[in-house]
Length: 280
Length: 315
Image 1 (cartoon, rainbow over the protein chains, first blue to last red):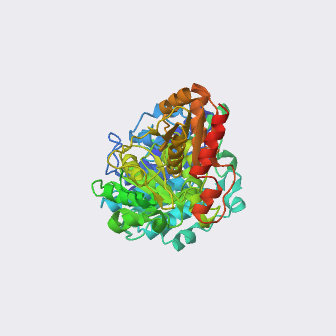
Image 2 (cartoon, rainbow over the protein chains, first blue to last red):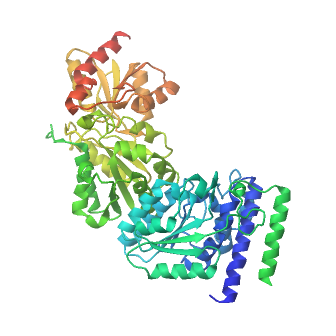
Image 3 (cartoon, each protein chain N blue to C red):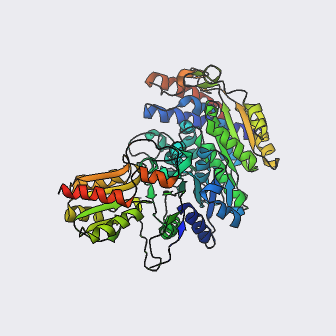
């Protein structure tokens, strides 16, 4: 990836972060912390990796994306808007009565959302079903899903991991957004989910560990995944919860609350400054 | 009279699925290490490329079914009723029903007629659990021929369906020459205006015998077979309530949550009449041969006749 490409990714991801802050501020609720930690992964997937068509969101042969950690949809919505699935102004109505953008992803109402999610652990199973469908029909589409590290405390994640590996779903890529924090504290304090790399390895995955904010590392991991045959890939992405907004970074308190007016102003000022710098 | 077939509805279901899959290539079957028991093994043998064993992991199986359905398949996910609807309830609610995905869920070994395995495997809550989910169609066929037609209707219907299968081999009573299945429509099996009996699933045949026996005594029972618990046939229930004034429900399920409640929900708002509920009286089952348990729990024509007479005495 050249510098211009990397800058373009960074710019889009920062705009996605801004969208997540605008959305949750207007909703007076939502989950900014994890939305910001996963924003770079969403951006790379939709702008570099996945074969999708915003003009034809139901295209049968498209690559699929499932946000297993459904609560982090604000930045995913922003990425979908930037990609052209719908207008960015929808973010201002996030979580409002009658809005297209629900508090958790709704595949029936939102163009670009391939699976309704929100209950942790379930998205990865649906992603397995999609990948299995491609195998049964000998189709080339690939399936991507993003899980939280806290989410991996759900037993269903490991049922799905066993299934993906046993059925040889090499068209499936599982990202784990490892920001190290969950509602009640750090993942180490609450559930002891680590080590995730050796867990996925022992379940038969091709496992790659990356910095989830480094686009070159995201790119090389996805290239590695595509070349890996016979087994699914897990990309364990170390991230910073609240990435990009100084007062949110690594703060568990920003898991599930919106900014107030004062905080909103500071966050937007910071993100606008980053956008200006990237636009150079 | 048609030939009586003695067969468990799980077996009729497995055979019907196989037949339908010959012309419908979208049908994919999933099981959770119970294919030999749910009889999806019949499908597995005929269409191995469209069958996947998910292992003992019902929650994941339902999610996989949701993913397959989102790509246009018609997945049929089978397990015991207890685990399919109990263990995987939330996957069914959030990953299947909320997005209105075209997933079919088959729950076998429902009711106390599961027999020797005992209480942990005798699911008495599945109809109630599935009925509370918006958009879920709930089917409970009563014999071999009804199961074949219900399976066909389940596949033709666009949207999530739960279908209840039994373990015990039972006699058929429908005539395939004249039998007609319409989703959401009850079937009047015996005409009468003295009292109404509304039955579903396995006990329908005993209820039929009770109605015929009582006819000889001059008691005219209206017997309605409800194979579709949701959406329930409101018209047939309201008409029966108005014309007979008294209803008895019969189901191999807890009296809470299932057919009885579904019938009362209709009558209470449209035509309140006394409803006597025959079922498993809010208790767990226990081990024993199925036929003995069915007698102990009162699923016999003899007991039904007794209850019908008790209710008629109150008129």
